[in-house]
Every structure is written in C-alpha cells, then in structure tokens.
Image (cartoon, rainbow, N blue to C red; front, side, top):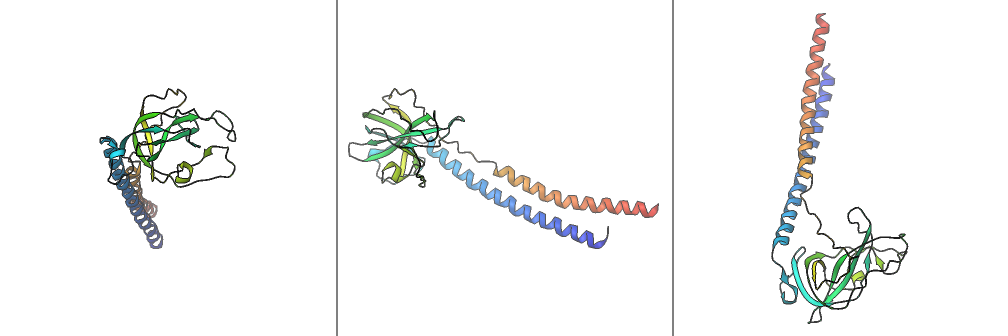
Length: 231
C-alpha cells in the first residue's frame, strides 16, 4: 500500500471517529435529558394527590390531583388517539367546583367503529356530582382541519376545550362510577429513558471499529506486499 493511500485511509478513519464521538455525545446528552424527565415524572406520579380546590401554589405537569365538582355534559371528541393497536377517540368533559372554577377532563377512550368522515356519537355523560382522581397534563399545541365531522377535533388545546386553563385533568379514577362500559380508561403514557444510551455506545463502537479497521487493513496489505516481494 503506497503512502498516499495510507494517509487517505487515516484521514477518513479519523473523520469517522470524530463524527462518531460527536454523535455518541449527542445521544448521551439526550439520554441524560430523557432520564431526568423520566425521574421527574415518576416522582410526581408516586407523590400524594393534592386537592385542586384548595391548591394556591402553581401547578405543574404530571402532578397527581383530586377534585370534587359537577361533571359537565358531553365535550369534544379528540381524534386519532390509538389504544392497544386500535384507532379511537378521547372523550372529554369538564368539572366545575363549588367555587365555580371549571377544568377540562379527559374521561376515557372509545374505539373508532366507522369511516373517518362519519359522525360519532359519544357516550352520554351524566351531569352529576363526582370526585375525580387523576394527573395534570399540559394542553397540546392546536391542530385543526376544515373537513372534520361535527364534534371532532385533533388536539387538546384551549380553543377546542373552551378553557383558559393551561392543563387538563387526565382522569384515573372517578366516583361514583359513571357506569359507561363503552368508555375505557386512558392509561398513563409510558415515560421511559429510551434507547439513547445504547445508541451512544453503538456510535463509540462504530468509531473504534473505524480506527482498528484501518490499522488491520494497513497491516494486512503490508504483510501481503512483503509476501509478494519475497516470492
């Protein structure tokens, strides 16, 4: 192998190694962020529920809460919310406290049983006094479309839910039971650390393979050249 080719191989392998180090570091930073967020969420979910009607300090995402109030009538249906591999809708409502403060509530999920353009009739939500235990979740950025069936929307946002709150209550337990068998509970999203740590390791391995592969290739060709000359 001539000197020019060796230099070229080393330049390529070093560039690949440097790129792998940067990619590995980026994935590791994402792992740290994801891990910190996962720990934060799990800490909030494992804490005791606070009473929304008595809470005066600022509230935050994933906080466990409980609230007593009057459940409103049917709210908007939120489209494209899959559950267990099946497409469906989130069923929403509102709960209003004795202090006349209203909060949007995610009550549950129903499957999509007809065409995407069909009007879906949600379960009839009784207007009654209830106690809800759940978690706070931030409202979503608004998404809209002009061809949606009546009563159906794409996102849990202020305009869709007609609220000035910055969050909605993801209901986990409700008493008394509404006795709506078609309404399935929506599970808490799984907040894991993700695969970023393993991606970081993979990029490191890839970088070292580039270096050791170059060394092996140069040595192999050098030995081959020596044998050729000796023969």
